[in-house]
Length: 180
Image (cartoon, rainbow, N blue to C red; front, side):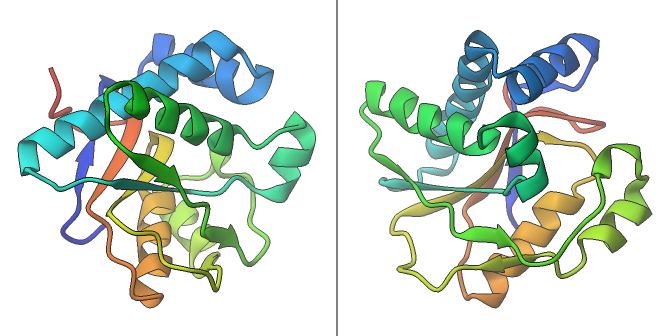
């Protein structure tokens, strides 16, 4: 992830796993909103800690087209749009810019170890030719386990000469939250 800090509210545990699965797989609106509130809270903390200027641009780690078809919706886009709404309530201007896309087929990550995830995702993301979002850029995902998805997203953005301010997630595995 280079120099970017990782901000998140909770450690990954059985309770947070149930919330993420209910949001991701079942489309549970309460759980989607909870994830969005956690991510927005982390962005607010990052802004205050680093004296970062506004506006905020949110870029997401994309879901696979197969997962979107299976769910009937784009989970992370739904979360990101809710994050923008949550930040607006706090008078923080934010935009959602889904500029990263999956440029090769990948395996389901859930059964892969850290090394396998890194290999699976190597070169998997690209950035759309589009206007670069303005403001401080936050790369978000709902969960960071090994960090392979975030690292690949950061690589794709760096190749497109897009720098990120921080990485934001609702929860993470084996890391210490900066937010208490």
